[in-house]
Image (tube, rainbow, N blue to C red; front, side, top):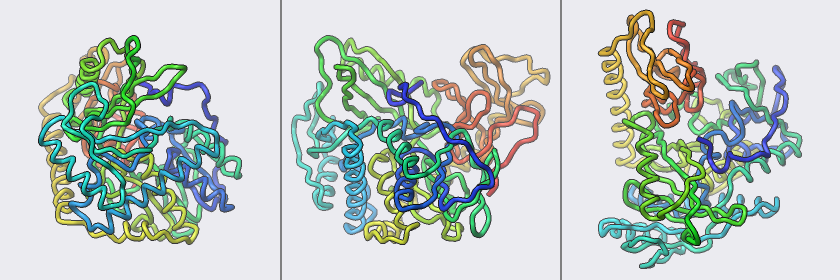
Amino acid sequence: MTSLWLDRTDTFSGDEFRADEAYDTVVIGAGLTGLVTALLLARSGQNVLVLEARYLGAVTTGNTTAKVTLLQGTALSALRSQYSAKVVEAYVTANREGQAWLLRYLESSNLPYQERDAYTYATTPKGAETLRKELAAALAAGVEVDYVRDAGLPFPVHGAVRLRGQAQINPMDAVLALANDVRSHSGTIVTGVRVRDVSGTGPAVVETDQGNVRANSVVLATGTPILNRGMYFAKLKPNRSYAAALELAGATAPPDGMYLSVEHPTRSLRDYPLDGRRLLLVGSNGHPVGRAESEQAHLDEMLAWAESHFPGATVTHTWSAQDYQSINLMPFFGKLPRGRGRIFLGTGYNKWGMTNAVAAALGIAADILGGHLEWANTIHRRVTSPPGAASAFSLNAGVAATLAKDWSQAALKKLPQDNAAVPAEGTGVVAVRGRKPVATSTVNGKTCSLSAVCTHLGGIVHWNDNEKSWDCPLHGSRFNSDGTLLEGPATRNLSTAGEPGQKDPA
């Protein structure tokens, strides 16, 4: 599964990693948050190193639907249900500044983007009630939306909230331009190096699988923080969702806007001009990571929905993405607790990273360089509401229940000591060998048996039948079928069955 954005030939070659070097700032993660932060710091004259475990845009940024909009489904009414009008206005200001910065950057770099009206639409009377709440919250926060009966979709709706003049992009255009720009300001970008830990009191020691480097400041731009300090893994809900690009039949054209439904499963639509065609991009069917009975069924259902409304469409790409929603709905960015003022983070964008990631980068860079952003200070000083606290309790109670249930279910299954049982091609199973849970799968004719215990906090991994990966239902760490770490708060691979397990540092 390769996204439309990552399916390109103009790749990026990383710089050489030099152990024991010292930098002003080390940025961990080469998605939008990390690269914008790195560029802002490099422009100020800092000596900056970006470390990426895989490749540029490998995780969320390269798999997004890439809508750059202030109308974000029902985000504003959800925030207003928990926070004061001042805090919601600060969130809008942050996103407005993130949007403006990104679009200015694309224009200055001669990179294309498409201006589109954004719509949040309802297909049921109940959904229309939700729309009215979003309309009121958006207007109160200074977002100039209006209400329309016809959203230009090929199926009936009960109305839509519209925001004119928003934008959609190819996110990898921005990522590659940012990376080259960081280099042009004497920054260094290294791919294929995984950070294990950050230690020391000053300068910080960044520990990687290929040696250590030192830095006055460290930025965690890894989707979810890879350090357990601050326990952000317990404050975030990891979700996986699906997307596809389709070429429509005949002279059929995609709808002219960017769309998101209020009903569940949410349906996202936008177009993308490519080689004289306009592809339709569909996104849908989000669910907690590692907790779906069949991820493939989620993708299949989304494609069936698209076919029902756009008959004869041909699928060109399918992919999935991982996003993190904070328990109190507001992104986290700024100084990491117990980081001695040297470690910074950005996370919890809740699927709206094209604006929130840039806003977080602006806030982080201001903190490091001694600047002041009033909207950032307002967001930092927010107070978690009772609904947010209840969400945290529910989330972590569910994590504990999942942990106990999965260990119990693994114990009910037994594997023969000689490992004679071989799963069918494309399948995986978790069972106990001796006293240890073992994850065994067969992919492309190769059978691998691994420890089924996630290297983050000991969850039992689940087989993802769509991406042929092992996904942890506790905090969203994901591993390839051979045990190689893909994403999440874990920093180490799954060990081969029978080898000693590995735990992450706290």
